[in-house]
Length: 169
Image 1: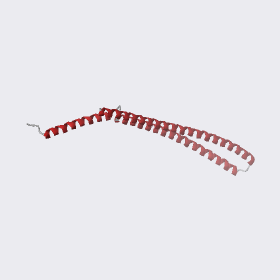
Image 2: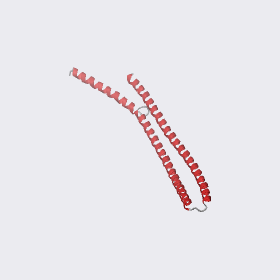
Image 3: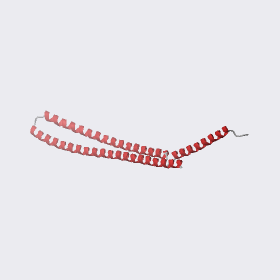
Image 4: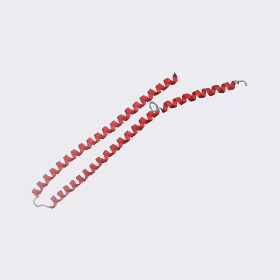
């Protein structure tokens, strides 16, 4: 049996295909590597997503707490408004001892208005502090996520450079 040129060509083509498959297998293993490859990037992104979702849950809980506080404050203010209305109505209906009632009402209104003003200032400061805390948490999460993605991109670029060097040599 003699060796034909087509046999040599078929052998060379199959040998080249084997070499190509070996190179592809090595690249796939390097890509799936959980330390430097795409697997590490996916794991880091999954951790970032879970951190963001937990921060979102915390923010929602804080917002619900603020909403409950506001509902309570609104109920108190409605009660005070009703009380003010009843005082105003009683002042209009009763004309006896008007000067004493007017003075008493003015003192009570002044006191209530000071109380309301003080309470509203406290509530505004509380809400401002909560908003600042929510911004700090959001900025921290966004900053940490950005740093993590930058580190992932940097490590991925380094691993690609190492892989290209290995394949070239």
